Length: 553
Image (cartoon, rainbow, N blue to C red; front, side):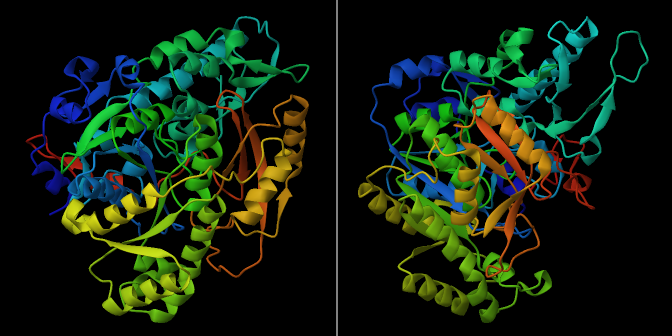
């Protein structure tokens, strides 16, 4: 059966019952049909004195086009913890329509380890991403309206982009205001995908609605004739934007196929944004359960680094355990095995590609964290390959757990659940951040480039140099940084899978996100508006005469 058929054939519990498992009363949820609910703001006051549970961060080795199943493993772990009698909850990101209709398909797990209702979650869900899109584009319309009616703020350069939650490379750079009407000022504009919008980052980093409004007001929309920043609050935009987000800021409650509660909220990508679900959702989950299982997008060099250096710093969080997801086929892919040969046993490729796993484990240990490697088992994995991987990791004192969540659900993750509990009980200490906020912008970039990406150095374009100088002059140099680069390689070249190669990281552009509270540096050819593949997943998605969705996987 396909994932969607497995999900559809599983009887879900009422969302009220799922809420009750977490101690949330019916009056504190706002239902969206039978299987989805928003958790009301009223819950926070009731649980603020609850003991804070353990935090499990799930990340991965450098991903491949083959897919590693990080979300599937996260779901299996939460179900596995429930299987051994622990009160567990998932805290995940919301899927973007971009990958759903693009190359990746759905993002709700797979096989017996899924969150449900999978079609709803993968599509419009409760409308959070639509609300973010609308708030973003409201600000765009207010900017151009202000310019149309005389430009009292003397806006000279607009840096704020419109957004859309779809992959559409045609919109990366556009011309607007071409109607020829009097007072309309044509200008160059562009679109980001919604998950890269600064408003998505703000929603995920705000601790409450009051801070949300303040952060929205601090968005820099452009610069005036004196090259001074113009803020959203100068346009009196933050109030209306907050109104559009009044429901989106509330976390969403759903369940796994085994009825483990799942809080899904916020969805920034980790290759072009900061890659973590909302602080509100994570803090809520940790007050409601013994174990919160959350994930950070793409590989540990991207999502985990940003989770630790941006989210944990802002929210004063620390993972008690980190799970690094890997697969035999991904290791062989990084060992140079061609895709058409990846199903076959290849010991040489496995032994060469395992360096990628070693590097990610080393990176996480630099933050002072305990790491368990989770092998997402596929049917084509041979006993010899698994044995070699286990022995290679053992030589490095790296703990491995074989996870069969796709086939067996929570029962296939009991071993790793027990290892997580044992490791979490001995967890202590503080995060070792990769840089100090007092470092210069370039010092922060260099520390990540050399310590996390294994680069020899960093090169900057002339435009990037000028923007860094301006950010320093404006007094924003003490913000954390968010490097946008390809997920497929430690370098900024997606095709460079040679772990022994020497390279520099190339910073071509810099964007100040004063509202979100970080600086984005774009490396290599990374784009904040992705494009569709030659054969998009959208071609396979359909609906039958009975209203059943097909083709989401």
